[in-house]
Length: 180
Image 1 (spheres, rainbow, N blue to C red):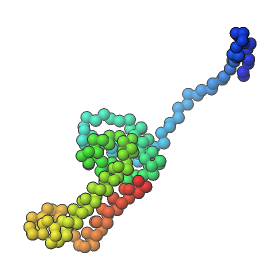
Image 2 (image 1 turned 45 degrees about the vertical axis):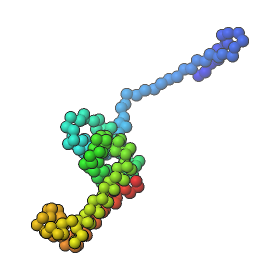
Image 3 (image 1 turned 90 degrees about the vertical axis):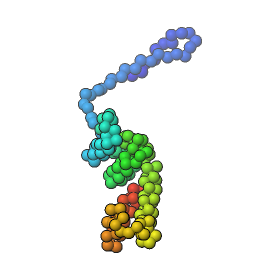
Image 4 (image 1 turned 30 degrees about the vertical axis):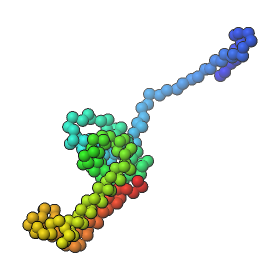
């Protein structure tokens, strides 16, 4: 209810109003966290990966971290598989493991991380092709016995097994950049 009071000073247009407001409050607490179990799992995974590098790292607010992972899934449209892959990749990377210390940093740097992961994949793929290209490979003249164990295993695979292995590797990198 608003009431007009008479002017206090002569010659001014000042109005004094009185407002009666009734405020209703409740003591009911509602949770604003909408995260799912997978979001909390991502938060705990990131913390575990960080602890591998720095065992003294302060424990985070897991609910806030889980909520940030929810945003990555819902707003940024990233899958659980993409999140886990990039978490693990970033914490294995000498530069990024020092910089991705929270889900908000992961979210902020997502596109850049994807680009670097894809570039790294291309380099490894090209190295793999060079190593396994028969007479052009760096171990071709040294003989089978001097080959590193992964190369021996690769050469022992059938063509079909090699193709399946390569396809699986390609798929892991391919979906990473979807919607990026």
